[in-house]
Length: 541
Image (cartoon, rainbow, N blue to C red; front, side, top):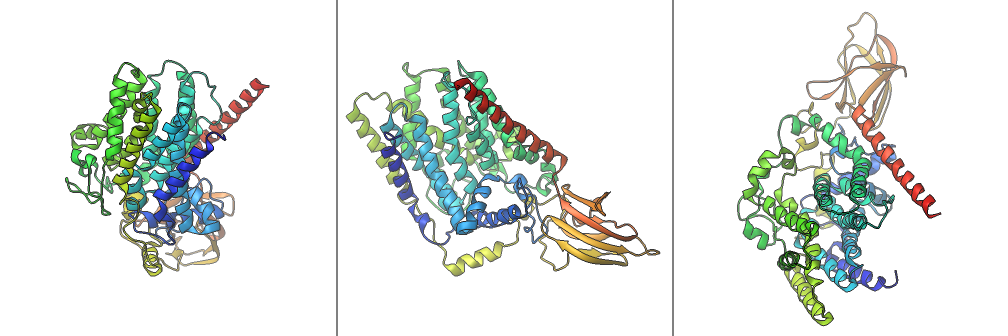
């Protein structure tokens, strides 16, 4: 560890310098930043109520609730929620962004340090200076993608450990990829597809790699399975009303080479509101790496696959790939083809290693690496800050403007399909009585509603409407033993038909059958890791 410490410190200190503007107190402009703060606060509220794993966000949509964490990557919010209890939601989000960014650089170093520590340090800094990193930080405020890019090098590192044919499968090998799934669903799945394709080009240890990938899927199944199997419960999927259309967000080839740094949004056409450049230094490094692989010294099926993955990602970002996106509908859920910049960001230092490792002279290697590092820094020198930092009053106005809403660009994105698409506003009422009933002893929070209802004899049965969004996870019991059917109203709220007489009703948010199955699979996968740990320990003894 001592021999690595100086290099690790260089990565940490220089990485912190690159994003130093985020240490400014308060918050800054970004597309999604305030949403992450609001989601963090909601995650903490849900965890305090004992809601685990996170699925329902009961205080959002003006208190009607939505299945936010069933469809939006939950991992960052577990971290930020716990940290926010100590340092507040703003600094919690910042801390997770900073830690993830630095973790990614350390991951690239760890991936390559076994072969050359100096080279690994330089390539890790080049990774941190990729323009897409700063786009996520200071323009988009893309917390999930920042966390995913911090974890992906570690997933690739554990993959390489198994790939070499000497390592045994251990309990920790599947964990980084499982965390990537939870950090960002779209990017996690695409990265897993990349690793799965990579595994077919291995000559040894293929079965161990596949088992590790399977366990990664299993650990993240509690999130992945409901995300896929229950997506028809959403208004956006049920009505085919997607937030963004993929065909309007292809990147022109010249934009990959250079695009003016701006803080607006992705728009159709060759002149965009933000930059999608690969980075001039990263392009040079990747190109030289590809040439090195095509030479006899480095040519192998697995290295050729890296070229295919890199060039394929570039191709899929351009309009010429429309037919691919049109045929593979699951790709369309990614919304933005330029999100594949994450793959070029990961692969650039990996490809570059193939070229730089050919340089035998230490002096020439240092000179070439220094030139690429300087070129990288010059390219991003003006990208290292947000458009502006909010004053306290500006941030308060922005926070209050979004408080209580669905914390997405469009309200219908994660709204249950039974609900009306129009914005609803808070009401002091929770239960609305359509008959001649008396409602007493009401206790409630975001997950449980308990009330005593006197449905008087000789009156029409009537119905009670609960001002909560209907979702299959809600269940009701009467007098702690009899199950009562819940149905959606025309506006998507919960409708209950009380029986005659005085009865106590409990309406509780629970797991759906699919969610229970998903939880079970993840628990079994976790136990499998424990079995592997014990087996390896016994072998050593």
